[in-house]
Every structure is written in structure tokens, then in C-alpha cells.
Length: 255
Image (tube, rainbow, N blue to C red; front, side, top):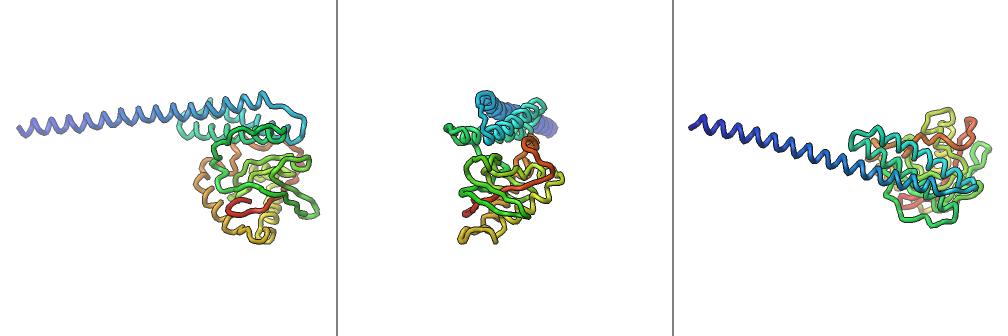
């Protein structure tokens, strides 16, 4: 009798383990399928925007160039994705491309359309709310919440070397050499320090609190991207080793 009970117990344990493995495998297949479908959905939406938007304004052209780069990068990521995380990265790249496409629509004077899901890499980075101009090392830099001939470079927000960079329109795409680690990186970070140090903050806006909150919020997304640049945001613009940008006012975590 004892042997019979032992055999039954072994069978139950083996059967339970087998069932749990089957259930886990089925759950993984569902999660993988959901992640693939989600990434594909945003990728296809980005493709429609890239193909249908056109414009000669510098801000429009630059935003569409960046959107097109993300479309190409997201397509490559989708082809190579084999895990839930890889599909999540492709989704994030597509969403970043849609942020650039949305910026192009704004520059064209069109309805930007419905809000997009927030970018993981841009969490806590905030956004520019007013125009800002500074002179650094004899050069003039400008940024603001709206596109213009002197601010044709859009950035959806993110982090460069752990520092939150707000979304907005900039006179120079300073984040490109900084993210690439090229020669212009140090110059761009020096300009960042000048623009976003407490000494430049408007009175009563609480830069320190906003910076700390933004940095902590973004740390959770650090695995997905530093600055939200999956597609290699190094195209567009003639650098020649220079880097510069303008900043904005900030409060409550926004700049």
C-alpha cells in the first residue's frame, strides 16, 4: 500500500510539473505573439506617416528624415526579434519615429493626431514650454516648444549620459554626437550644463527637484535606451565637430 501511495505521489508530482511547463510555454507564446503584434501595429502606422507626409520646410524635412531612420531601424529590429524584449525595443523605436512624424505634422500646420504612448527613455525628461536663447563660447543657441527656421531640429525627449533632455525644437541636434560618443560630445554636454544649470533657471521653477525626479524616473528605462535613440539618430545636419542647443524653462519636472 505504501508503495502504491508513493507511486501515485510521484505521478502527481510529475504530472503537475508537466502541466506547469505546458502552461508556462503557452503563456510565453501568447506574450510573444502580443509583443510582436503590438510592435508591428506601431511600425505599420509609422510607415503610413512616412510615406504620406511631405514638406520643404527645414523643420519638416528634418523631422521626416528622423522618422524615416526610425522606420528603417524598427523594420530591422522586427525581422531579428525573437524575444518579448526585442519586440519591445522595436515598438519603442517605432513610437520614437511616430514622435518625429507627429512633430512633422505640427511643423506642417496639420493636426498632430492622437497622443502617443509615452516613450520609456523620455520618462521624466519633460518638455520645453517657452523659447530659450543663450550664448556659449561665442556662439548663439536657441530652443523652444515650436518649430522655426532657427529651430529645425526636433527631439522627443530622453537622456544623454544620464542627463534628462526635454522634448522640443533645437537650433542644433547636439544630442547626436553626444549619443554617438564622437568628438562633439564634450562640447554638447558643456552647453547642456550651461543651459540647464540652476543658475540659468527662471526663479521659482525648482530645477533641482525636477532634475532629480526626471533622473530617477528615467533610470527604470535605462535598459531600453539612453536618450531614446534606437535607430542611430546620427543623420541630418552638417556637424563638422560642432554641437549646440537651446534649453527651456522648467517646473514640476518639465523644462
